[in-house]
Image (cartoon, rainbow, N blue to C red; front, side, top):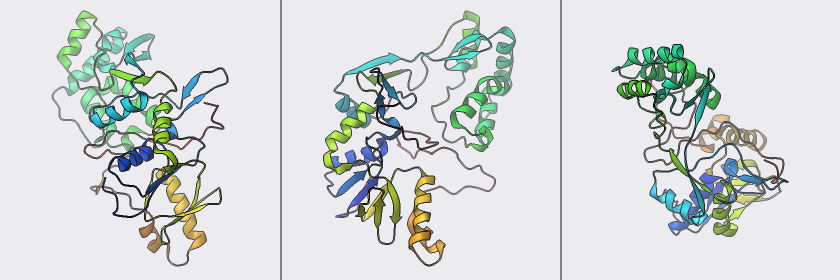
Length: 329
């Protein structure tokens, strides 16, 4: 990331993305930047909360793993090495059986009729090139009809809250276990579990404070550059001013938003209708630039964020949630 020379950079949101940007700017010696967060705490959807009984809760399940030395160093620094180290043990409950993850490698755990359906589906597509028209065709051509019907489609539809044929397939990378048909047959013959696959087969977790402790510490170290209780209510991209619900207003030279895109555009367009005269199109062009690669005719619109080359994460944010208070999960 190359910051604009001698310009004030305003970062909206003190979740992992916003704090990470600030951390990197500080590392590079850039000083004219600030982070503004609407909540009374940093961390965004990766915050953690303490309940009245003293239990710590994350918002959803978080597993920290990485192939990026820079993030690993950041994690070690924020936790001081005071972490639990776990081997992943995940299971799918299906037809009265507990099937270890990855599902396709452990179909020997299924009842005989379902196991046979999955195996025949794998054999039908063995050696084929994946059909990348969408995520559903990718799975059908890679894993076959049985595994897709029993596990892949219902699991991913629930996970992403979107039909699989409306999702692209070019984000999959190493998130779906590759198929080794000979090994799967051997697992069936030996009744053998195979659970070690995947980038998160082992992972770390902070010993105290949940996932949110990582970002609490990052915000603490960034000091007064991070201001909480600053909910954005208006953005004037022509005058380069952001207004907050607390009555404050702030000028900027460059704006980095980590708000959900829909929320950002609602704020921007609402500001345009109430504050500006002139055609909407001229405002739209100056309000927000969202990089996107051109789509060919007939292609599907991706429903998740595509990571660029070298990006450390691929995370989908389906909604923005705010707990009622910092003591309630």
